[in-house]
Image (cartoon, rainbow, N blue to C red):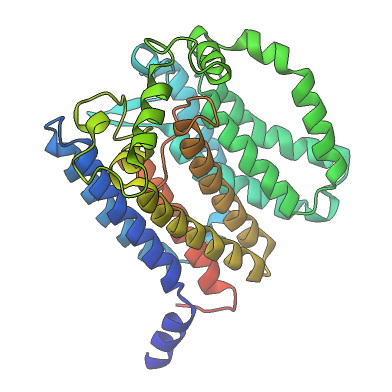
Amino acid sequence: MIDLKKKFSKRFDFVLFTTVALLCLYGIIMVMSATASLNRPRLIKVQIIATILGLITIIILSLIDYKILGNFYIPIYIFCNLLLLAVLIFGTGDKDWGARSWLSIGGFAFQPAELAKIAVIISVAKMIDKNKKTINQPFVLLKVLLFAGVPIGLIAIQPDFGTAVVFVFFVFVMLFAAGLKLRYFGYAIIIGIISLPILWFSFDGYQRKRILNFLDPEHDTSDSGYQAMQAKIAVGSGKLHGRGLFKGVQTQFGYIPEKHTDLIFAVIGEELGLIGGLILFTLYFLMLYRLIKIAKETKDTFGSLMVVGIAAMLGIHIWENIAMTIGLMPITGIPLPFISYGGTFLLVNMICIGIALSVGMKKEGLKF
């Protein structure tokens, strides 16, 4: 028993766990500030409860053999697609957010696309693992792409293009890590460029407006470009030290829409300034570094690819959210990992960290 504890303490990545816990604490504080003027204490309670449950889930998952997930990758994949189909039939959210992305069951609302991230990472990692020796054969690659493309397509037609891009990104990163030849990525870029006109005409009106506002920030600052403009004003006004926690003008007087979810980095920029942003970047860098370290040190292809997918998924979320807040990307409904309000989103990210820690624990054959 003592030997087992020594092995656990030696192989459990306390740095990664502590970093994630600090990010969650940072998130709770920022959600408290962002919602102070809304008088909605329930939001803070949900975030705290989700954090506690998430940390417990991380510990539990780290003790479970991750290879069990690979054994059930087909049922996981089917369940994921059934949930996404249910969203298209019974989902809500199109009137409020322009996309039918939510399911409500017994008064509990959640986004199946968030759960689908875990499912797709697991199932695609296993699919690549089963075909790793022939992944560069066109037929095999097409099979993997079609396998990954079904849930991505179901998300795109909600329509939730921003989340679909997240899936495309981490799937391509997983394929790259698996040794897919660079020429295939070149083909994908060419196809993507050729498809731009088709994509443009397939977008809804609000999606086109967001792109136009990105290209011309002063295009419509009173309506469709309001979010982006107010976010940049908030971040710029924070300067080096920020206006102070709970003292942001744009934040506390309600100028920033969705300030506790998609645009929470604007709150950080205004109230904590550049210093607060750099602290956040440091924590994110450390988290991603530890995930990449686990992926590199893991000899099992399935486990390594799952961690690669998790790191890529979190990385693109971080980039998209912060970039859209400061005007480097169009506004999308992409929240900031461990910081933005959202019980489902937070728990999904914590589950991903638990899976990554399980891979790290088992890379040398530790058993419980």
